[in-house]
Image (tube, rainbow, N blue to C red; front, side, top):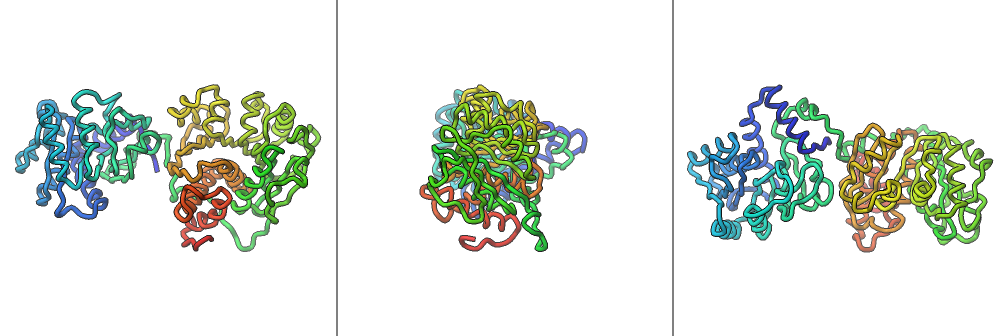
Length: 521
């Protein structure tokens, strides 16, 4: 699903109006009708309910006036408040205001505190409050009288629905005004907006519904958006197929170099992900200081080998790094490595000689940032940093990364010609050409140690099965999100564990393949 910025949405609208020839008033009429149909689905019918609609002077206000007219024409109790005189409105909004008045419904002009009190009373007796104040046209903070209106709308106990985007939310960046309308539902028009799916905007948007306003696909495509939402429809086309005649060699080898004396379980969790990916063979290499000292049992399907260690971690020289390249596999390196000069040297040797695809995670990312090892890599790379690791890689602060996840990931991916999986509540996947994919499925149950190891193993195993690096990253991220949601639904976010989440990956696969998952499958 393509996600549009403010500018891209405006480009798509202009194309539909000027190139395709759809009048702007037709698009506004479509927007109002389709938004109303969607509202009916959200709140379970319109009859017998009362609506308060708050409109601004722009085209978002015009959409609200269309909604109000159709509610009124269907004998649904509706009150309309508008923050502008007809002379102050955009031409299309003014037209719909005049039509509404001639139809018999007079909007209330909001111009002072007394009017806001009247708005509060109307909302008190309404089942639904509809925000059509600013839409995608907002710039900066909402201030003064408008801020008081938004604050009053947030105080209501009625269901809060925003049309297109909540007032005060930037459709491009997801940044919020103070105040911003805090919607329970957002009905976005024509195409979903990028800012609705990234924090903090996602918090204000609530549940997002897309209303088709008959905006032609050619117009949407004309905007040239490079942002896409990772959905089940997309992910289901990416996961590799299985053939009953295949053997284990057909499903590939996932090679994992992980663990240290400080973090003995990291490689084991990563191996869970690789096993659940469907890879034919999973081979786990651990430092030999863990021989007889593992904190938990390795699953019996995993082939375990031990490599020389020093100071509690790997000590891999050039000869050993070259020997590892004899495997035709996807390599995962980094979970639980720890940080020391000897481990940095080991990682450097591995990266210099590994010509295939490598997934770099966790401490390997910290070693790269400390020792500038990325330029030495011989093969293709997928890196899977969380925000703190990305801050170290880029030299930016954590706050800078948080407020600019997308551009940070895109810049690093294009500059270094690698795939970046920037992990956060909303995960950003960036590829070297600059396209961005968002997995917008936050889950506090996954906010615990080991989730990244599981994801890295899952991506490595999927890549070992022969699909492209980008598709491996996308499908791995989505499968973990799906498994995490299944685990949360059954176990709860508080107590679910990462190892338990791994056991839900099979059910996630079944859902993507259109099969009904059985309990604990």
